[in-house]
Image (cartoon, rainbow over all chains, first blue to last red; front, side):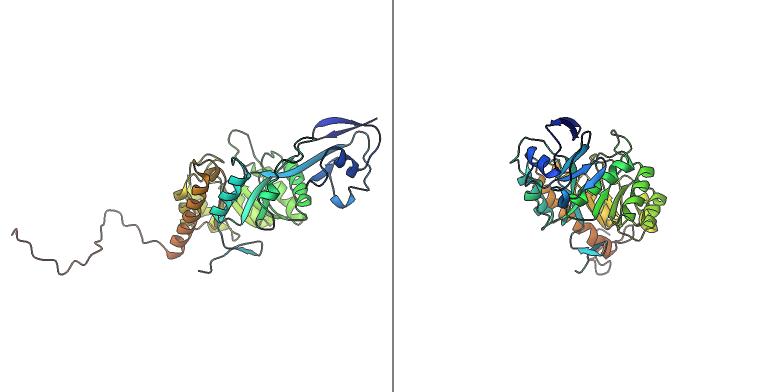
Length: 67
Length: 264
């Protein structure tokens, strides 16, 4: 088991996985999101190759209405 | 009239910039944007909902970035570091789009800008190639520093964000305009169309607002009023107002040729 903190919530996964697999598991496939891993931007083009590790901290964001 | 607003080398026909927050739904958001004639619209960057509402409506569908110039903001950020991270995420989200609205707030009661953190964030963002439009106080010295750092527009508050209190210190706005060469856009405080007109009559290059439209009883009608207020104020500024003559009236009609009085 590995634990990954996503948007401030700890989540458990059965093993190591790619960013793309995590996006899929979160039901976000096809949604326009941007992702930061441990304070660094993860370009969308690398989602399918970047492996996540135990203890990673992710921020997944979208554009919303604002002033 | 060929009177364009030029920001970072790109020209815009509308001098009204509007926010996309606080509307009833995306349909109302879009109707208000269309009525306002705005080309530049601000958006916020927020954590996505996880594993729920997969099919919920998306701002990018209602307000397509192909039709509007997005201006992602850093609303809610209280440190330079958070603001910079937010805009890096925005740039990734919007496929490399570099025009951004930087705001670093001081406290949640006043939403007054923390200019020290704002200056620090502006330096980092400009160095990373962002085109930074910056929310700041109406302090002319800070405005000049932000321009010297390389910000592409200076956006002083006219009164507190969301207050609708209007243009409280026109003198400071003029001091800011005298010092900087990049566009000065009033950001925050406008409450109704006359406020927008006053800002433009002072010579501001544009006005950015959200609550004044979204918080009106009829947001779409107010968006139309704001469009006219900005246009009226701009034209009045360009036309050059008559001088004020305190205690000295001046008749509009000829003083010669008045029929004689029967009373004397």
